[in-house]
Length: 569
Image (cartoon, rainbow, N blue to C red; front, side, top):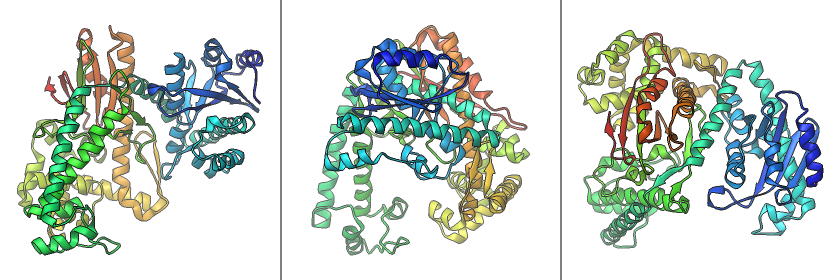
């Protein structure tokens, strides 16, 4: 029901009388996706118990809106909650005082295997109406128009349906979480939702001039490489198998292997085997700079706000394992591109009077696997500083890099065939290397087999923190060690985020001292120089996020003026 400001005052009064932990779902319709670049919320819907209301935001005061979200004893529910929170903060300066339950995050928690966690997809799986037909019909007949352009009699039911669906999802999710005893995980996720929202809101400061110079320089290298390729091929270069397969055979007598669909494969691991040939080397160079220009420099420039800040989207429900992901994908930022004229991470700089501080878990996945499998020999090697990768390399007669790559590939279920492709060797050689690894760590081998058998038998796996994984296809049981360990690392990082967030908010001297982004096993901070004395305590919070039976965590700390030029502490 569309309400007036006067009616909204009564609704706010009755909200104040609701029992503790009553769920209030809310949803905004906005002019775009980024409040950081000027998009605004137009209309809001509220749903609780059996009631649903909507109100145009330009008709009410900011105080009205603040009062709606002022109840500490209520639980505020939204799908992709960080998105809604960002509009409240950026457009109105409002913080939600009660718990925040993100139905998108919780849906991933209770059902990790789905392809989509959009509101429509979650609603459809729960037997709820996914979309309002009137809005669908209106958009079809009004190409290029926005949801917010629709007439009121179409817009209001559409907006209210989203809040009603979010509320229904909450009730279902709460029951499933209680049934499986995942209440502590749910409480953790609610805290992490707020922390990630703070990170997104803060953003990372970018050296805009540096990114522009880098884009110009590397675009020139890309263009030069394109001209060389076109000249060598005798025709305008096209990066496709149809164009390149005959050229590679003609110039270098290279016959490409076929994909499962029977097409020539131009995968990177295939081309790497032939990079001594001129054409292949140029193709790899072209792809290298094409990725850097489009994925990094152009993307950074597009997302920057007027104050040169990049506001990332950190996906709390990003991966099936429970790991975070982000847009842009910070995990793909190369950490070892020192030979480039413009290293990617150098673009991200500390704010005035601040330093970038990186605290990174050392051997996080391996440590967790060693501890859970109770591989005592390797636990001793790790704590004693023994180079166990070199020991296996010597045993198998391979390089240390091959032994290290093989260990992690095998750890996460790679077959001998896949391992051979990864290492660029025959399947027989891969089997020999894999056998050497299994002899070196028999308890890990035994533990991995145990996890796979569990999935083959039950289709269910649980990590040490209670996160559940369902395997509809039990043939995918080889992923079990990966899910258990990657998910466990994700949950350890969540604990670390909560500990570091509390420490900073209770002990920092400057509001500029914040966490910026989690990147795989690492948390990146912006710390004011007055708060650098907190680094040992932040380090401690990350270490104690997991205390193992035979092996705990360790971290490395680095500091600098930008995210690339960091010095170890």
